[in-house]
Length: 239
Ligand code: PXP
Image 1 (cartoon, rainbow, N blue to C red):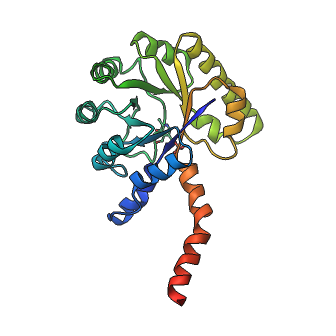
Image 2: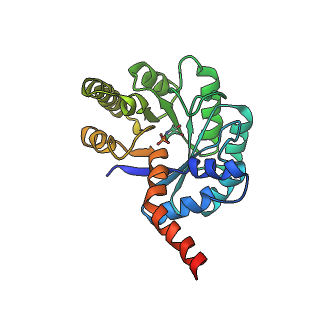
Image 3: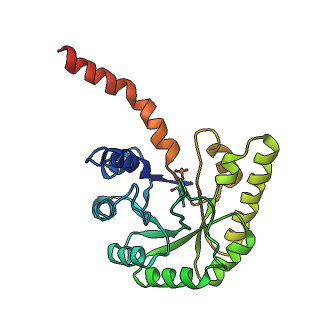
């Protein structure tokens, strides 16, 4: 069965908008675990715009499932990850100006930095995954570095605007996933997956190990929870 890693970054985005203590992504992670999440994913960006180091430390301490830390190959971030030792580290490219991770990691173009970071993490018994576009060359480069887990970037599939584009982006994911699996790798996927496009992906690539999904789940939870939240406040005011 395909596992679900819930990304709670955007609970932290809301907290950071006020620079106060709530909503706490750590608390959100606990609720996600209660609801059946197989793991929790957070992206500790270099600019700490949402997830803070404190969140990662606490998550590592309290999670009953697995912590997947998304991170760049920045030396200080790697130092921190080597210290915290999450279950897995997913190496992603990072640009300061971007709204979210824009493309997959160029493994070949950054071979030295990626292999150094991967080696340091693996030496600390942290599993390493590389977030890459569904591209056979990138998978081969990951394999050359002795990394055996990849997360395929599903952003282009998720953003495809018509049926023809959806089919072609899905086909790229199917071929890349099959190639990675046949090369002996564990294949995860994520980015932009939502309540409309996830089922099709699962049906077409049933051997995926795990999907990492964040924004759509946090967005949906606003609407699935807002009625009760308003009722509760109304009760307080009228009592
Ligand atoms: N996987 C990776 C590597 C990511 O960088 C992100 C976004 O932080 C996700 C999955 C989750 O993407 P989304 O929030 O669009 O579901």
